[in-house]
Amino acid sequence: MRRDDSLTQHVDWWLFTVVIIMLGMGIANVYSAAYNPDHPSIFDFSQKYGKQIIWVGVSLFLGLIVFLIDADIYRKFAIPIYLFTFSLLVLVLFMPAVHGARAWLGFGSLGIQPAEFAKIGTAIALSTYISQVNIKQQNIPTVFLALGIVVVPMIMILLQPDAGTFVVFTSFFFVLYREGITFDPIVLRIVNTLPGVKFKETWVGSHFIPILFFTVFLSLITLLMSGNEYEFTFMRGVLISGFWGIIIVLVIIAILAYLLLRFISSKREKGRVLAIVLIGFSLSAIIATTVNFSFKNLAEHQKDRIELFLGLKQDPDGEDYNRNRAMAAVGSGGMFGKGYQQASVASVEANHVPESETDFIFCPLAEEWGFMGSIAIVFLFMFMLIRIVVIAERQRSTFNRVYAYCVAMIVFYHFAVNIGMNIGFAPVIGIPLPFFSYGGSSLMSFSMMLFILLKLDSQRRDVLH
Image (cartoon, rainbow, N blue to C red; front, side, top):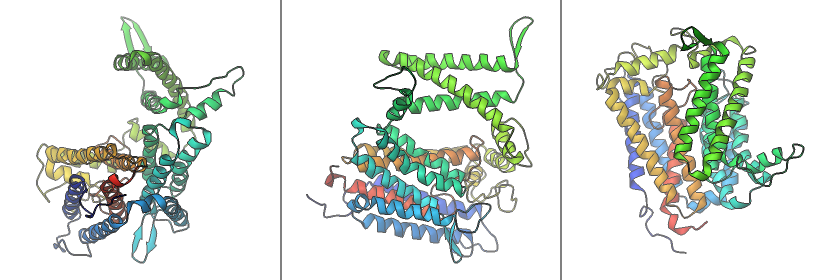
């Protein structure tokens, strides 16, 4: 087996360059968002922008370390790495709560967030497991073990609780779907327990993701409409309102969805498309009914957050203050922005946007550089994601390919949800924007994650499994 003499001979310099650009832009953005006129130097380490420089240096150092490690180490020690990160998730539950959550391990004046590094451990473990199983011979233990690798740390993260990271972990389910690990064995076992039913195969599990998406979409539509009174005029003097009005709208959506999916599907799949729509429609009705029933038993602040996100109530100066101010800051930037360090709504002095250097880092960026600058950041992330997918598809090793897709989905979730939070398209659940938000744990984990990918890709010619 031949090894390349040069460590950097097959490095993907496009991805490396994007990472370095984002790190530099992140420092500049944090400097602007957290600027203190009494401490104007960007190298003042008592300020957040000075600390961010330290974190960037540490992240690059850790990135170099993981890049120098031979790629085979990650495959051979996948389970120890996974167990180590999982043990940190257990240990953090015994730490004092900070802002109502036990998510940080403190070391003196510093602290790390184990959930950020658990993403790396889970990605490596899942990649190792999928590379060792026969996808064509799936059974219930195979599927359950794959799910367990993801779900077990999710449970620990939910206990902290850390809703943002919990949501990010659902990205691994798409990787399972991409690699052909479906829910067929589980669905088949459940279906065959019914009296008089005996199937040898089922396609419901293999179409789990499309069914899930359609179900969630219809459920959200139902919940959005259930909080309002609607009237539909079909002819003069004939009004249909309330429950039946919602049903009519859902039926129309289901028909349009079926026609669209039928148009873009092959002849062989047309019957399955109809089944997906019917299953999604039925499940959405059950979910919406259950949520409406359970909604009555929630605490008042939980009801408020759900109703605010769904748009069923308005409270711009109360529970919805953060999201409202974030959207105001983004909108105030206009087309070309106000200029670097010229933000008014998202500035430190105005203090209208809480945590503008962390979860809402996109706000000062959008206000300073406007729509055009925001689009440039979106394109930069899209280029990174496309590059990671290109890297994934050229791998000869299943382990490398699965890991690359894990990285792509994690980055996509953070990018999409964080910007969605800032523009009102997603609930505020505390997800940082990769390489831009202030914080050491996020920077270190993303840097290590991508440098491991660069290392695996640089040695892709040396592995066949």
